Length: 279
Ligand code: RP5
Ligand code: MG
Ligand code: MG
Image (tube, rainbow, N blue to C red; front, side, top):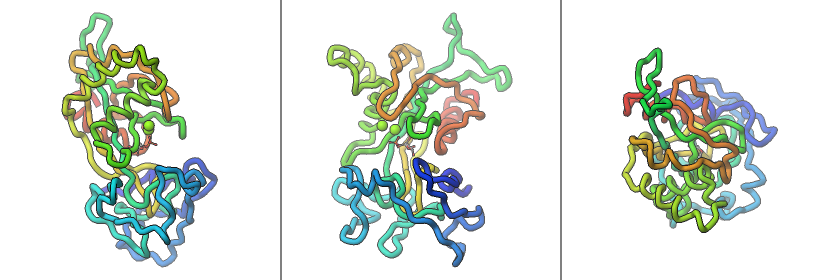
C-alpha cells in the first residue's frame, strides 16, 4: 500500500504544532528507527473532557480491538498493536503522538455519504466529457469550516449508532442544514431523504482514512456509501444549504483533478469506475 501522506502533513491542523518529519521509507513500524522522536499533542478541545472524547490513558483502560460498551474500538484494518497502553496507527508513523483533535484512542469511526446524479444540459440530456467521452457524474460536496477544503459531507458515528443512520444524519445536517429547518418544512424534506437513503446504496470503501488529524495513537476510519439519484428527481430537487461543520455546499463534477480533503478523491474515483462515468 502507498504510505499515508496527509497523516504526515507538516503542521498539525488547528495548531502551531509541527510533526516530526517522517520520510516515506520510515513510515512502517517494522522499520527500526531509534532517532524517531515524535511530538506529543492532544488539543485543548479534547483534554477539556467533552462527552465525545475518551479520558487520558492511565486510570482509563479501554478494551482495544473490541466493541467496548457502545464504542466500537475494532479496526477495519484488522487487529492493531497496543504499545505501553496506547494503540499504534496501523498505517505507521505520523510524527505525532497523543490524540491531536481526535476524541478516541485508536480508531475513530466515521461514515461518508456520497450522493450523486448525472450532469445534464438545459434539455435534460446527459453531458459527456469531451476527452473521456463518458457521462459526467456530480456529487454533493461541502466546504469544511475547519480547514476550508472541499469534502464529502461525512461525520462521526455516534456511540451505538447504526452506520446507515450516520450517513443520513450527517448528509442532512451538513448539506441540507436539517438542524435549522423549520418544523413545518421538516417532514417534507425528511420524506425525500428517507427515500434516497432507504436504498442500500453502493458501499464504495471501508477502512483507514488518510486524514490530516491522524496521529500515531488515533486515526480516522470510514464506511463510504454511494447513494445515486439516477433519474435526477429525488434529492437533486432539494435545495442544498450548508449547516453544522460545513460552510458551503454544492454539486461538483467528478474528475481526477479534484483536490479534496483527506483521501476523499480516491472514494470518488471508485464511484466513477463503478458507474462508468468520467474521471
Ligand atoms: C474524514 O473526516 C471522514 O472521511 C469524514 O468525512 C470526516 C469525519 O469527521 P468530521 O467531519 O466529523 O470532522 O476522515
Ligand atoms: Mg457533521
Ligand atoms: Mg463532518
